[in-house]
Length: 161
Image (cartoon, rainbow, N blue to C red; front, side, top):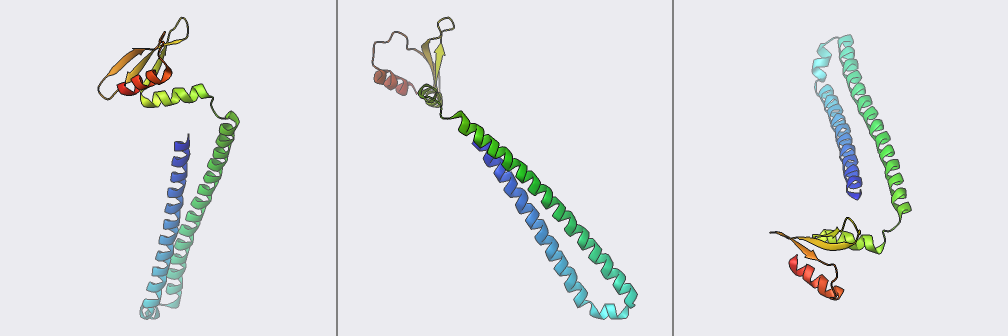
């Protein structure tokens, strides 16, 4: 779940970065357009004033449309971010409401993480065997009726891993 949350945060950051990059690119293009207008002053003087104004108005409208489009996209992304943050808060509340798992659940999670899979008897429901997964093989160890202390069984399982 935390992996999904971090992926969501990463995606959100990437989208924000892309949006900011697009806005910066549009700003650079606008600045370039302004520079071209300033540098081509001699050309503008040769054209009629009406033609120059039409060209400038056309260019301005194009820039305004692009900026408006990027701002709309940014608003949509911010709404999506707000929705994702709300979902994240709900998930956090659900996790907090569930509380911490008990000791047996934690022990099973640790054993499974080490490659030890407890095998319960279907009739009695008691764990009688354990499957130990190693890099090269899998072994089944009987744990039922063992008089040996838990630390000896743990050492044996550790050696098999």
